[in-house]
Image 1 (tube, rainbow, N blue to C red):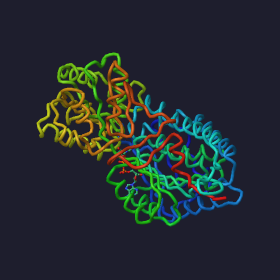
Image 2 (image 1 turned 90 degrees about the vertical axis):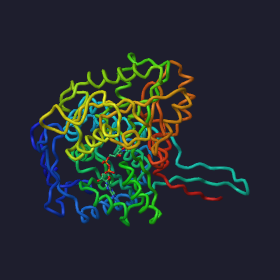
Image 3 (image 1 turned 45 degrees about the horizontal axis):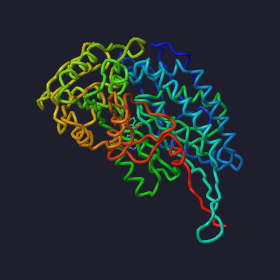
Image 4 (image 1 turned 90 degrees about the horizontal axis):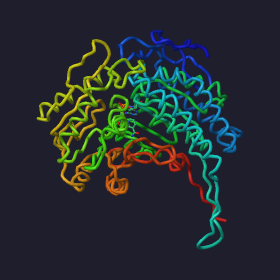
Length: 489
Ligand code: NAD
């Protein structure tokens, strides 16, 4: 590697001067750099070159060459690709601690969370799709209804542009990379500018795993480059995770181009606490469901629906949960709530807290001020007496801010849960699993958990309404990276 940044210590600047394109570290077309800062301290963590349109053209061309190579990746037997995916998983495992530190340093995710997600999910999802690719046939013969037989043949789509956000940068990248690669596609990844140093580490793992040149290419610029990739004539499929506003723009462009697109967008999910729910024994799961990654989590249940006859108890429970959380440097293993990713995002979250107060919700704990001098911290904040139609209950805040809303009876809980533009996640809390499942089925959302929330590799993950189109994970996620080709015999 031309510009290997040495092994990480927390205060060392990781300076890169090249981009990972076509299986090698290449000089970028421009001298400009993106500076990446620590969310906990505001200090510079590293630098990456700015990728220009010329770099994007080179990445797409490399991915196209790798895809059309007559003996290359797309032509390999699924078993051969599965072996390569497992090698990449092993290389990522060998970089686990460093990966967790890099992600947490940049985006503020507590390191105890990033070790379980950012450092573990990519290898896990690679191994899941490696096994699936080996098991699922790529062609099947069906008896014809009118005459003969039909051979249904599944082929890769081509060059995939994977555009990802900063909140779970590695996890969300691999929700795309693993199925796309297992199906035989080649990929150009465009991360957010807030989280680039983890992608340099990923590039090292890709090279060490011997993934063929051009199969995975990584760019490093912001929204302009993302938009350029979406419209690039060399791209066959767009896979996007990010905000609903940007998702709409991308869907519009993809519509004009008739280019396949998968969209994983924002959320404002509900935690329905039923009148028989146990709170204390579920404390850890309730925290994860609503406050994982400082609330910078798309599926977080940030609207807490509490039965009126237990309302005070639920408010007291969340007050204690927020006040008992350890807020601090994301790299401290004891930290439960770290900072927001950037000063700009911190300001946005604070403005929602001010809006909640102005709109008449009761501030139970937290508030717009921070106890920290450095970094982009927001105090875990709980609002009670929230009207579900208010801004803090309807709009995605993406921070540690929860709204507790009272309901009377299960039907009203379901109605309030569904009274949202979004439909990504959600949870139901009850000691009666059957009753909880009955309610979960009536919530209009792509995914929902009972007494916990954690997406599983084997089940399709995604949103309805303004939370997205298409699904990731499971066999359904693989199908999104395959073309169907019917041959009538
Ligand atoms: P964002 O939409 O601002 O950016 C996401 C990515 O898109 C970044 O790489 C960005 O550079 C790029 N981008 C921005 N504008 C673009 C454009 N016009 N064309 C192409 N690319 C463009 O989102 P963010 O602030 O980075 O992430 C937070 C959002 O992501 C939240 O809304 C969150 O709910 C959502 N999210 C959704 C899921 C999910 O699985 N549904 C998961 C994580 C995050």
